[in-house]
Image (cartoon, rainbow, N blue to C red; front, side, top):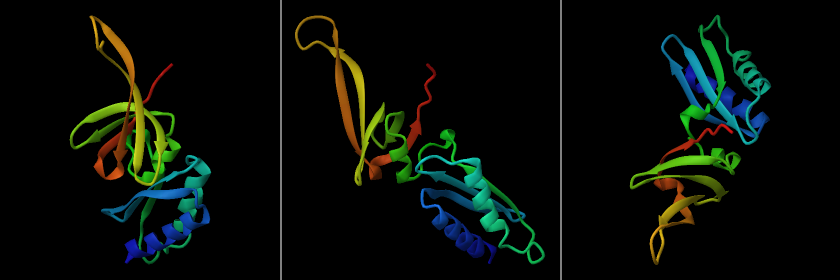
Length: 154
Protein backbone atom coordinates (compact mmCIF):
# COMPACT_ATOMS: atom_id res chain seq x y z
CA UNK A 1 0.00 0.00 0.00
CA UNK A 2 2.77 2.46 0.81
CA UNK A 3 4.26 2.08 -2.68
CA UNK A 4 1.06 3.20 -4.42
CA UNK A 5 0.63 6.12 -2.01
CA UNK A 6 4.25 7.27 -2.48
CA UNK A 7 3.97 6.92 -6.27
CA UNK A 8 0.84 9.11 -6.26
CA UNK A 9 2.50 11.75 -4.05
CA UNK A 10 5.60 11.66 -6.23
CA UNK A 11 3.59 12.16 -9.41
CA UNK A 12 1.82 15.14 -7.83
CA UNK A 13 5.15 16.66 -6.71
CA UNK A 14 6.67 16.29 -10.18
CA UNK A 15 3.52 17.75 -11.72
CA UNK A 16 4.13 20.91 -9.64
CA UNK A 17 7.52 21.39 -11.37
CA UNK A 18 7.25 19.95 -14.88
CA UNK A 19 10.95 20.47 -15.61
CA UNK A 20 11.64 17.62 -13.16
CA UNK A 21 11.17 13.95 -14.01
CA UNK A 22 11.58 10.61 -12.30
CA UNK A 23 14.64 8.46 -12.94
CA UNK A 24 14.13 5.76 -10.31
CA UNK A 25 11.87 5.01 -7.35
CA UNK A 26 12.29 2.08 -4.97
CA UNK A 27 11.12 1.03 -1.56
CA UNK A 28 13.77 -1.09 0.11
CA UNK A 29 13.64 -3.26 3.22
CA UNK A 30 12.46 -1.42 6.32
CA UNK A 31 10.38 1.02 4.21
CA UNK A 32 13.43 2.95 3.02
CA UNK A 33 12.08 5.07 0.16
CA UNK A 34 14.66 6.14 -2.43
CA UNK A 35 13.67 8.58 -5.17
CA UNK A 36 16.07 9.73 -7.90
CA UNK A 37 14.99 12.73 -9.97
CA UNK A 38 16.50 14.77 -12.78
CA UNK A 39 15.47 17.94 -14.51
CA UNK A 40 15.61 19.54 -17.92
CA UNK A 41 17.66 22.32 -16.32
CA UNK A 42 19.35 20.20 -13.67
CA UNK A 43 18.21 19.61 -10.11
CA UNK A 44 18.79 21.96 -7.20
CA UNK A 45 18.85 21.15 -3.51
CA UNK A 46 15.55 23.04 -3.23
CA UNK A 47 14.04 20.74 -5.88
CA UNK A 48 15.01 17.72 -3.77
CA UNK A 49 13.68 19.36 -0.60
CA UNK A 50 10.35 20.27 -2.23
CA UNK A 51 9.92 16.74 -3.60
CA UNK A 52 10.83 15.22 -0.25
CA UNK A 53 8.39 17.44 1.63
CA UNK A 54 5.58 16.69 -0.82
CA UNK A 55 5.97 13.01 0.00
CA UNK A 56 6.95 13.11 3.67
CA UNK A 57 4.28 15.60 4.79
CA UNK A 58 1.54 13.43 3.30
CA UNK A 59 2.53 10.11 4.88
CA UNK A 60 1.63 9.18 8.44
CA UNK A 61 4.56 7.78 10.43
CA UNK A 62 2.06 6.56 13.03
CA UNK A 63 0.50 4.36 10.36
CA UNK A 64 3.75 3.07 8.87
CA UNK A 65 7.33 4.12 9.71
CA UNK A 66 9.66 4.97 6.81
CA UNK A 67 12.83 6.79 5.80
CA UNK A 68 13.02 8.92 2.67
CA UNK A 69 15.93 9.90 0.42
CA UNK A 70 15.37 12.17 -2.59
CA UNK A 71 18.47 12.37 -4.77
CA UNK A 72 19.43 14.03 -8.02
CA UNK A 73 20.66 11.76 -10.81
CA UNK A 74 24.42 11.45 -10.81
CA UNK A 75 26.68 11.38 -13.82
CA UNK A 76 28.04 7.96 -12.79
CA UNK A 77 24.67 6.26 -13.35
CA UNK A 78 24.64 7.19 -17.02
CA UNK A 79 21.69 8.38 -19.02
CA UNK A 80 18.54 6.44 -18.19
CA UNK A 81 15.74 8.66 -19.50
CA UNK A 82 15.30 10.17 -22.98
CA UNK A 83 14.82 13.64 -21.51
CA UNK A 84 18.37 13.48 -20.12
CA UNK A 85 19.89 13.52 -23.62
CA UNK A 86 18.60 17.00 -24.42
CA UNK A 87 20.26 18.61 -21.41
CA UNK A 88 23.56 16.94 -22.37
CA UNK A 89 23.79 18.37 -25.90
CA UNK A 90 27.35 19.59 -26.41
CA UNK A 91 28.86 17.05 -24.03
CA UNK A 92 30.89 13.98 -24.94
CA UNK A 93 29.12 10.65 -24.51
CA UNK A 94 30.24 7.04 -24.55
CA UNK A 95 27.37 5.13 -26.13
CA UNK A 96 27.12 1.35 -26.32
CA UNK A 97 24.82 -0.45 -28.70
CA UNK A 98 24.59 -4.21 -29.07
CA UNK A 99 27.08 -3.95 -31.98
CA UNK A 100 29.57 -1.22 -31.06
CA UNK A 101 30.81 1.46 -28.69
CA UNK A 102 31.02 5.05 -29.92
CA UNK A 103 32.48 8.07 -28.15
CA UNK A 104 31.58 11.47 -29.52
CA UNK A 105 29.98 14.82 -28.92
CA UNK A 106 26.20 14.78 -28.63
CA UNK A 107 25.08 17.35 -31.19
CA UNK A 108 21.41 16.62 -31.82
CA UNK A 109 18.46 14.94 -30.13
CA UNK A 110 15.09 14.20 -31.72
CA UNK A 111 12.12 11.87 -31.25
CA UNK A 112 13.92 8.87 -32.80
CA UNK A 113 17.42 9.13 -31.38
CA UNK A 114 20.66 11.05 -31.04
CA UNK A 115 23.46 12.28 -33.29
CA UNK A 116 27.09 11.90 -32.19
CA UNK A 117 30.04 13.55 -33.97
CA UNK A 118 33.74 12.90 -33.50
CA UNK A 119 37.08 13.16 -35.30
CA UNK A 120 39.04 10.10 -36.31
CA UNK A 121 42.43 9.47 -37.93
CA UNK A 122 42.21 7.31 -41.03
CA UNK A 123 44.67 6.26 -43.72
CA UNK A 124 44.87 8.68 -46.65
CA UNK A 125 42.97 7.50 -49.74
CA UNK A 126 46.16 7.91 -51.75
CA UNK A 127 49.68 7.73 -50.40
CA UNK A 128 51.12 7.18 -46.97
CA UNK A 129 50.03 8.71 -43.69
CA UNK A 130 46.76 9.51 -42.06
CA UNK A 131 44.21 12.26 -42.33
CA UNK A 132 41.72 13.55 -39.73
CA UNK A 133 38.11 13.07 -40.80
CA UNK A 134 34.82 14.14 -39.24
CA UNK A 135 32.56 11.19 -38.42
CA UNK A 136 28.98 11.07 -37.24
CA UNK A 137 26.49 8.44 -36.19
CA UNK A 138 22.72 8.65 -35.85
CA UNK A 139 21.73 6.20 -33.10
CA UNK A 140 18.14 5.21 -32.35
CA UNK A 141 17.11 5.20 -28.69
CA UNK A 142 16.04 1.56 -28.99
CA UNK A 143 19.57 0.58 -30.07
CA UNK A 144 21.29 2.22 -27.08
CA UNK A 145 22.17 -0.22 -24.30
CA UNK A 146 24.22 2.28 -22.25
CA UNK A 147 25.07 5.98 -22.49
CA UNK A 148 27.49 7.70 -20.14
CA UNK A 149 28.48 11.36 -20.05
CA UNK A 150 32.27 11.58 -20.35
CA UNK A 151 33.82 13.88 -17.78
CA UNK A 152 36.61 16.04 -19.19
CA UNK A 153 38.97 18.23 -17.21
CA UNK A 154 40.49 21.19 -18.99
